[in-house]
Each structure stands twice: as C-alpha cells, then as structure tokens.
Length: 130
Length: 340
Image (tube, rainbow over all chains, first blue to last red; front, side, top):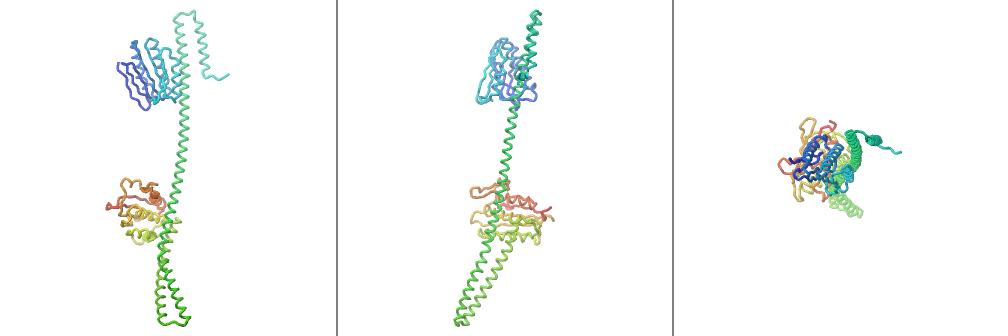
C-alpha cells in the first residue's frame, strides 16, 4: 500500500508512515482545531495496514512535544488498535520519545502504555526531541 | 473518607463484577457479551482518568505560561518607564547644556567691547592722574593740556561706542536667554529674532569662518514660543558646525523664510557641508541617534528640534538633501499663531 506522508503544520504533527519498511512515525505538536480532520486519514491508513494481517514487524515512534485532549484520546485509540493487532500476532514495538526535562510527556507515555498487553513499549529520553 | 472523583464509576464497576460473577449459569453468548461490556467500561474509565490528567496538566501549563507572560510584561513595562524617564532627564540636561553654550557665547561676545572700554577708561585715568600731578606742581603747559584733551576725546568716544555696543548685545541676548529659560509665549518679529539668535551664536560661527545668510520678509510677526524657536535654530547651527564641516573647511549656512499661506511660515535651514547619508535621513530625528557616540554626541539635538517643533511650536519638520546636492536642508513649517 501507499506510504502516508503529511508535513507538519503549526498545530499538527508530521506523519511519516513507511508501510513497506513497517516504520511509522508521528512527530511534533498536535493541537488541531478539528482532530478528526487530522487523525481521520491516519486512522484509516493504519487500519488498512494492520488489517493486511501479515505476520511482520512494525515499529511505531511517537515523538511528540505537545498535544491537546482530543489528540490524547486519538492516541489512546491508536494504542488500543496497535495492541489488538499485536494480540493477533503482528510484532509491534512502540517507542515513546520525550525530552529528558519534560516530565509531563514522560508521564503521559507511562499512562498511555498502562493498557498495552501485547505491544512492546519503550520510553526513550532523547536530547533535541522534535 | 477522602473524596474520590471516580467514586460512581468504581461503584458501577464493582456492581458489574458482582453481576459477572453471578452469570455462571447463563449461556456463553450472554457471558461473553457482559464480559466485553465490563472490559470496555473499565477501559473507558481508565481513559477518562488519563484525559482528566492530560487536561489538568495542559491547564496548569497554560496558567504557568500566562503568569510568566504577565511577569515579563510587567518587567517590560517597568523597563520602558525607566527608559522614558532616563530619556526625559537626558533631554533636560541636553537643553541645559545648550543654554550653557549660549551663555558662553554671550560672555565671549560682550567681552570684546567691555575690554576695550575698560582699557580706554584705564588709559584716561592714567592721563588724568598725570595731568593732575603737573597741575599740582604748577608745571602744566598748554601742550600738556592739549594732549590730554585729545586723549580724553578719543578714549571717551571709544568708551561710549563700546558700552553702547555691549548694551545692545545684552539687550538682544537678554531676550533670547530669557525666552530660552522661561518658555513664555509672546509676539515677536521672526526676522529680528532669528538674527538675534544667530548673534548669540556668533563666536562659534566666526571661529569656524562660515558665512551666514538670512532672508526673511520684514515685519513677519509670530505669536509663539521664541525660546523654543531659538533652541531649534541653535541646534541646527551647532549640528552643522559639528557634523557638516571638517575642521578648517568653511561653508555657508542659510536660513530662508517665506510665507506660503497666510497662516503659515516656512523656514528652510540649510548648509552646504558634507550632508547626511541617505540611510541616516530617516532616523535623524530619533532619540539617541548619533554618528558621534564616541566623541560626545548625545544623539538628542535633532530629537529636541523635532519635539519642540511638533510640540510647543505646533508645526512640522522634515529633512532632505540640500537642493544642489551638497549639504543638508531642514524644512520647518510653523503656524503664525501656535494655537491653531
């Protein structure tokens, strides 16, 4: 399937889903006025990709510095979708990046990963997170 | 008992667990369905907790940012206030400094006639004492008396003319100085006043060897603030002397006055010196703009000109390259009465 590449805007993150390599990246800030306009295309692409059902490795990176409540709900939905796919046999590794001095983003990562039972989840502190 | 935000949800979940536990004799499809519902509700409650946390943190961040913003804004406003106060006080001291230069000029100008009168008076006193000695010794001859008369005539003529000169200078300076110090508004003849102001700057101008040209229609009466006008002219002239010419270079300063409309006069001050780079023209009236920071320029001279012309004098001022491309020209437009 076609890769999904959407450039970041002031209020929405960069989307770089390389489906061929199985490397999916969300990077930047997310506080769109209309969350469904931003996350709609992301979800439908992700859904199609995961439904292909190939037993393969998928890496998904969340490299976010700020998001609003709608985006938080969308992220939780995404995590649940990934966990279902992992339960069905896809090997999924999620990495949650945060700047070392950004406790808030670190705690959000810990919170969001609570319900993950099948996904491999990494919290990664990085200098110069986007 | 502590307050629990999700008390109702937790109780509902407990009820659901009890319900689930009591379903053992129900058909498989019902048990699975209830299981899924309980799981989904449980997940939903967890998500709700997270979302509340996300929202609270975002609000807290926003509040912190707002506080920081308010603090910085207050800081910036204080700094701006301090700067304005400093600027006002610098402008005051610059005005005083130029009043000082004016007084210096006056002293220098009056010194010459007073000095001549003094030496003449002293010469006359000596001659008188000599004559008295001869008279008391009864040794006075007609030639001695004739010589004394010639001396007395010459010296008294010189004393009179120089004292008159000094008195005339004092009269004209007095008006300029009083106006400058007081900021009184009155009616005055523009041409005469411009000449009086230039006379007080005479020593500076003569020292540099510049020619000064004044053209003004006779009998042009302004009802305005002569002190402010005098300050404006002084600053123009000092500006030309300091910036317009290299030392040893002589030039012409000109003040052309006309009356384009019945209620307004136009004064064009120009010199034929080095002029001002195009890039500096737009900033020339800005406070603290100077090309001579290192050598004592305060950058306030033309700012004061701008403030006086647009403030008390009620007019406008602009700058351009002089018409012939050499030097600089300032155009000041003033109302005949500063009240309009």
